[in-house]
Length: 161
Image (cartoon, rainbow, N blue to C red):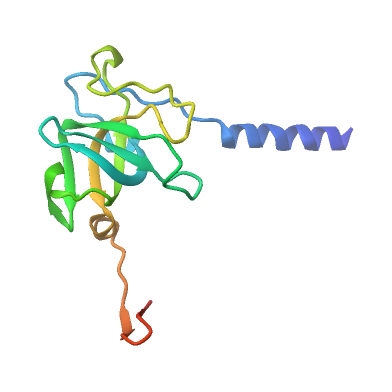
């Protein structure tokens, strides 16, 4: 009896921890809270800088390649940072690893990019970006820093901590 109670307690805790929170859909005409955005990172593979759209190959399960593209559209008030400074999509070279904060579209019927159901981890339903930044900008915003200890040109290695 105690085993059954213990197993059911552990199962209920696991279900609560693994339960996905409901996706946040912003209201039209209101700025969404950045804390409700979902974070993804991926390689920039396509850019339509005029319409502020693009495609990322998301980093899922340790792989960039072998996955479908995640199409996104920048929100009108969305920001892009490249090398620590504000930028435009045309300033970011293809192949750059970008970190982004994404929301669901306000109205899926009027979405500028194809909608996804979010069942595949490589193509989540959140496809409207409020923030895109390269790894340098991401680390600056997070306050991460490294101290360069030395460079060995013969071995082509860098020591840092």
